[in-house]
Image 1 (cartoon, rainbow, N blue to C red):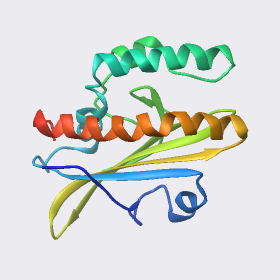
Image 2 (cartoon, rainbow, N blue to C red):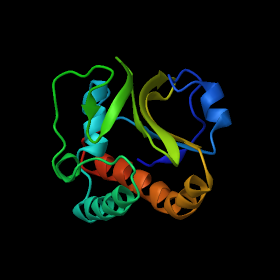
Image 3 (spheres, helix red, strand yellow):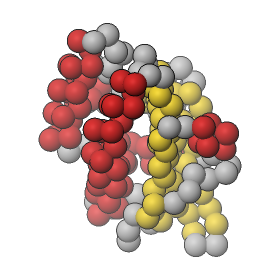
Image 4 (cartoon, rainbow, N blue to C red):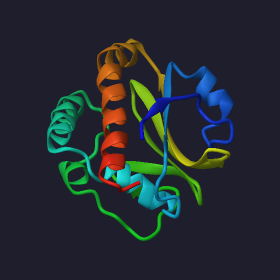
Length: 173
């Protein structure tokens, strides 16, 4: 099993227009060996098992971001994300507010001074079976957003691939 980069699915709640206007976007797909999982279970199979070193990097990044007035998740939301039985728009799933939720997709993210980002976790069924597609979309508001992404994107790409690969290897997906 492996993770492949792909296009953002046209049926995602993110919408084709948002993706096309974004300063940055990427999508990764992996086949699910557990297609019976609900979308919240898929989300936490991916983002509820972040390696300790990755959590520490996020905490340091958030401490620096907080100094310049950016909204960031708490240390507790990163170290021990709360898992609830159901979510609605406006609730936090992991460290991020939910912008959309349906049976097959969760869109979470955050708006900030330098950029807005959205993370979609989407279950899709097609001829090859059931897969998960993780899409990230960033819209920048200023030069700081562009500089931030310049430094973060390589870590982001490697991190998302690692989270998906780890979830597959651990048979959480």
